[in-house]
Amino acid sequence: MQYSATRLRQNLYAILDSVLENGQSIEIERKGHILRIVPEERRSIWDRLEERKIVKGDPEDLVSMDWTDTWSGVAEP
Image 1 (cartoon, helix red, strand yellow):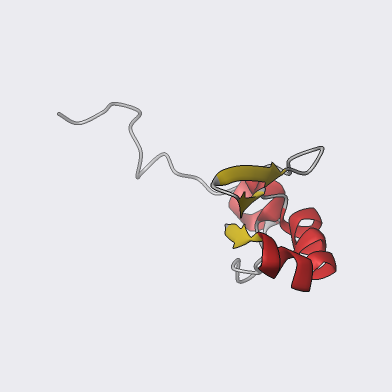
Image 2: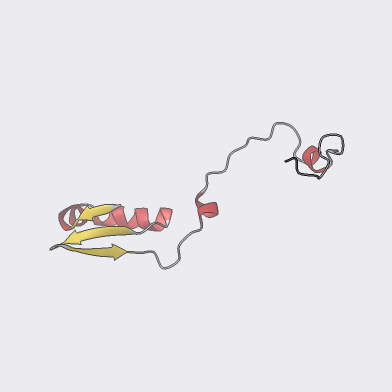
């Protein structure tokens, strides 16, 4: 995301908090140059994903499912 120096100055703490929360860098344009604020440690995409409860039922049932009738292990052309 890119900000002007004026907008950065107006919302400095909110923008810095946003960088810390989402782990994404921001760019600031100043006198025709681009400056970048980058968090020291970037969070991986997996850390930024929102947890969702999509398994209906007992997740342990997925571990013991028998797929031998469905999957032969051979790729079809």
